[in-house]
Image (cartoon, one colour):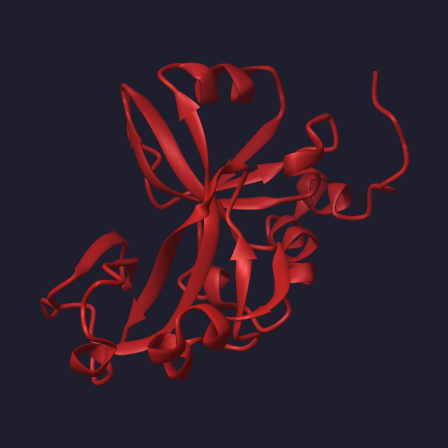
Length: 184
């Protein structure tokens, strides 16, 4: 099995689970035992400063918590983008290129010079061994390459159609699929 860590799962119009309707998920881990990701385009109205005050200066616009997924919504996963991806940074675990997860127990002041921005996610999206692969085979997800800025876009509500449009061809046409049309 080839790991899909660092790739995007883009919900197809056929996906019926309301937790994932028109979502874009960045896979931060994918191994034989399962997969873990965060939904990149579900911003809340809760400012990062209200929950993680010391980290708020590093949060990219919009500087709010994001709904990472339905699993453990009281937990937090923080994505970060390194300024210099070739340097090692304590507390940073690379997902793909300059993007990775950050350990929130580290003092943010120690990371300020090396981090170009963060996103904080409440909860995550998780799949057991083989579950995600089956959902992909069933037509629930497109698996697409991520760009380094995808996790940090200023307008997260626009991410689903934006990722689909940049694929071109028939995939770009899916970006215009009406949200209220049922597929059978």
